[in-house]
Image 1: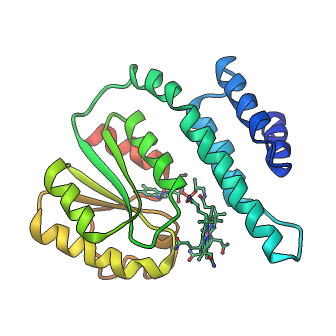
Image 2 (image 1 turned 60 degrees about the vertical axis):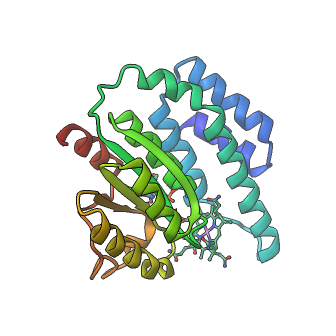
Amino acid sequence: MDKHYQVFLDYLDKEQKDDALLFILQLLKDKKIALLELYDDYLRPALNEFVCDSTDEDFCIWKEHTRTSIVRTILEATYPYLIEAKKDVKKNNKKVVVVCPSEEFHEVGAMIVTNHFLLSGFDAMFIGANTPKHDILAAVKSLKPDFLALSVTNYYNLVITKQITEQVKAAYPNVKIILGGLAFTKPGALFNIAYDYHLDTLEAIKTLGGEV
Ligand code: B12
């Protein structure tokens, strides 16, 4: 394991929010890591590979919540680096709206994916977690994006996802639908859903950014 990542994990394990944030800011300032490395090699595994070694479920839950909150702070606090990085990105003049449907509270993946879209040349906007169908349709109506990207983690949110995609396709047939997130890794998850792209790697966003 990378030595910097190990230091970062130690801070997270002890819920040392200030140390974790300052450490990451220093790594970025010293160019020891790049922004995409931060997202993919630090923040994502810190959450997805989190193992709680206690048998006390309540203890594990608050630890997971605190860790998520620290990761969110780091994502927001490093946004100025994204603004800088975007200056060197060739724009493709395509707009993408990223959103999580109602009841989908897992938002860190969607936030990171939005930043990947931005760094791949898209004009990208994250609307939020737990967004009702009506509000997603209203956003599509007024923002007129080229793409609607839905981030879904929980399998039980596939039902509402199907409804959203059908209504978007019926009302705005030119809007291309991108699906991504853990829920779509379940076999058969994409069956019967109206979509244009299912992207399962972040590299695929970059490829799409160059093609459209
Ligand atoms: C943090 C977390 C939470 C937090 C979320 C807080 C927040 N503000 O986001 C809280 C505490 C709220 C939470 C709640 C729950 N959680 Co939870 N949670 C997690 C955890 C630990 C990390 C998720 C995360 O943020 N990962 C980091 C991001 C960066 O990774 P990612 O989401 O995978 O996203 C990447 C890719 O999937 C992809 N991607 C994602 N979206 C998109 C979209 C597009 C368009 C594209 C191209 C790509 C893409 O790119 C991303 C970046 O690399 C996972 C563990 C795990 N192994 O996934 C469980 C996990 C996702 N949770 C789970 C469960 C069951 C729940 C609860 C039901 C628990 C409960 N009993 O209360 C609730 C449900 C809440 C709800 N209604 O949504 C299960 C889901 C199982 C399933 N698929 O159904 C997991 C897998 C835990 C487990 N092993 O059982 N959770």
